[in-house]
Image 1 (cartoon, one colour):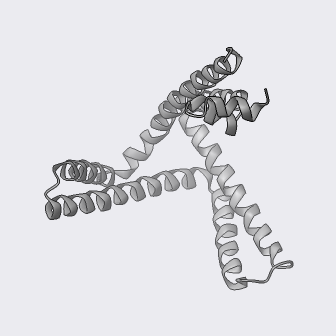
Image 2: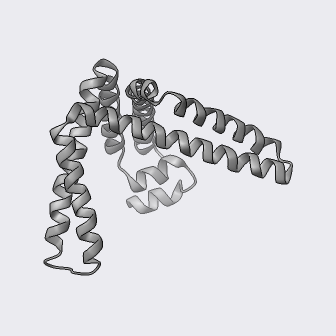
Length: 192
């Protein structure tokens, strides 16, 4: 029996759908890397976060140069490409030149963005709740609004706790991926 036939027999199971897209060992590898990343965030949050921000700066810098280089082949939207590559190059240089400041700034900016998004979503849900008399949207809107306000009240403190939150979620997601990969492997090895 071929692989697609085996998948079609168990088409309704999540294991079959995931196995068809990703092999079990790739999900296991993803889970183990997530666990390691989570442990790094919990064990050394400042160094890990600074390293990831430095990688982001290098990515933006190199991406900016590649975007300018792409103009030799494709000149469509040249103005936008030059503008965006200039921003990428400047941001990359600033991040690589001032890594600690960039880390604090990037985390605080991320927290402010999430806080503003929470307030926006909260107001939208509250508006929907008042218009349609929907209690669920009202509760969700109130929670989102309070969450957004709490994030905006002190973004630096929230930014300082963000690596720990990322670490906890990375470990939880990694454990879930490892368990799922072992379940998929077991389902593959078991007779139909």
